[in-house]
Image 1 (cartoon, rainbow, N blue to C red):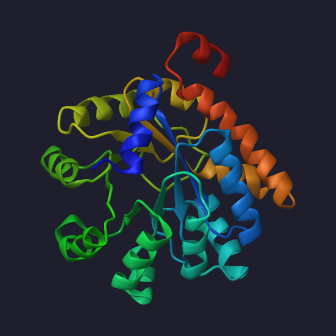
Image 2: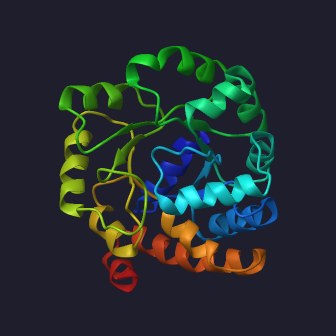
Amino acid sequence: MATALDEAFAKAKKDDRCALIGYVVAGDPDMETSRAVIDAVVEAGVDIVELGIPYGDPLADGPTIAAGSQRAIASGATIDGVMRLVGQTKAPVLLFTYINPILQYGLEKFAMGAKRYGAVGVIIPDVPLEELDPIREVIRKNGLIMPMLVSPTTPDERMRKIASDSEGFTYLVSRLGVTGAKDAPDTSAVRAQLEKLRKMTGRPIAAGFGISKAPHIVAVRDYADGVIVGSAIVDAYASAKGAPNAAAAATRLVRLLRLACKRAPAAAASAT
């Protein structure tokens, strides 16, 4: 049975564009603003929401998302509160978090709650492939999927294994290091990685980490099924004061990014 994630990728393909996956830190800077920003990015064209659960030691996140997590934690964000946000979101939601908060909350409780509130799946970037099975068993038992990440330095054999095991799509990390919009990815290297990965899996592939501007998307959209933009969205709404302004700032950015996802030449020219 196709999931909402499958349907989102299929719709993007039918529209001749790559899917736009937008990352938002749940509860940043507070739940009211977060809810307004999520509604705004979905309305502006995000196909899938990657909802980050605030965590004080986010190993894969750069300064922008780490700061967003700190703001959310300071305002009282909890996993229960994040789950309620999931239930109020009108696009497929993937939760993005780390293993420590899940274990502290309770793996079974986490998976059951995520499913009950309507999440499609969860991305947990800090669990090694060799230690994933018992966690994935619980996630799967509760009807959720687990997309997995490959990096620019992942050896080919391991990349093939991850691509085989990844559910929903394979997440190609576009550059070494953490998330962030400060340094642009080497898009020619990303394209080469996408082509290599394409030969290993029939599932969708989405590129993230450093993908922050329309030209980045234009450079990879013919090779990727989806792009993931996080820090640029957080930067956009974090500098705005109040929920309406934050939502408006996120809307302006997402509309530009969505235009860049369209593979038709006319739309590409207007996006750049």
